[in-house]
Length: 454
Ligand code: NGQ
Ligand code: ZN
Image 1: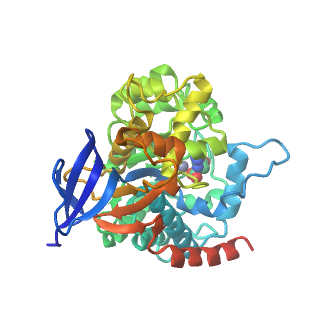
Image 2 (image 1 turned 180 degrees about the horizontal axis):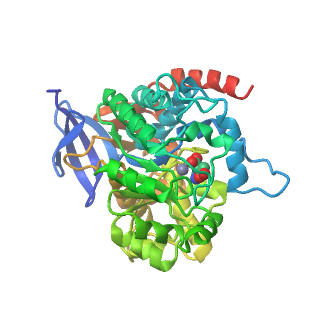
Image 3 (image 1 turned 120 degrees about the vertical axis):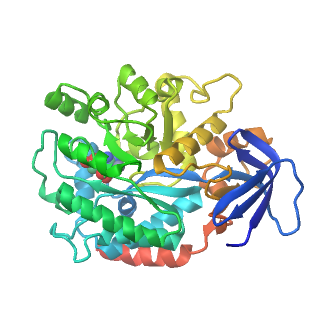
């Protein structure tokens, strides 16, 4: 059995709120004891203040490499769909080795920003001409390699993709690298799950890409295959997706999904942007997590998630960095609240209750929902992975802030620049804001980009 690691913090954000003089004991990567109100003991690592690591419930790591390359106005007016064409062109050239290099860079940035486990919604399965690789799960293994190098927790979500639009429209040439049938997908899933065993605490789930890309019978088969594992799906991200779904089925995407699948706590509905009031409260009631990706949703012009009605109905959400155009857990939360403020012309919306801190509410809800969606309950609690973020209290935005204002100061006044150290499974990976393998991973990423953008 591995040695006990002990840490002591003046303040730590526990599931029930801030506590003082907290001692955390860690064995085999998980918390075995958490005791508030005790003095520091010899041998304890010590820091001023600890937050739980943040789950990142939705990432397409490879898209990190195209950040900033889709921001020039095109001939017809740009949208999600024109961005997607740019993304498809970019992805044409990527090899498994490129994917590993780009994902490692993205995962280092995630850790430096406070994300400690990532849900990788991985669909780039095949070779450039659409052929299977000799090692059919080659690109999943590239993701696993990147997780191993960076030390981030991985919930690998192999994606099933078969069609280009509702009603089983044939896939386009640009989509040929993504495609499976149910049998070939089952093989791919097994190989990815086996490959992920090299990681200490990887989990696997299943991701039907969207109702556009998966037929109803396939969705049922995937749900069967998933058993108790996480199931993630893109849903109702774009207004056109809603109108296409209505034309196909007479129902809206969320409405259709709730009627035709056993949506429950295993499910993560990624984006869930365009929902009626009834859909919003129905998703909340089912216990599914809404996977909100505020930076990407703003970047792609998706629309705003109905956050307040969803939360008031008891809904759970987590955050994702999705396109990875910018990787910053704190900024995701700020953007979530600011979107609501701008549309509603009000303030402190997601705090929900009078007297509650908005930063505290945003952070804690995202830890809980993100942990649920990734299949491993997060937070500073016994049994959870020992994933910890500490803050630089000398940061100009954090100085002289009482502890109960710290998350507000962090979310609204700072960002990933205020993060000092990040621990994963009781091992410190980030200190002074820098990941221990930042330089070699960045050097490999630079070489990859040189080729990809040549
Ligand atoms: C994706 N991204 O799978 O990378 C998608 C674009 C699609 C977002 N939806 C492709 N943000 O949805 O068809
Ligand atoms: Zn996505």
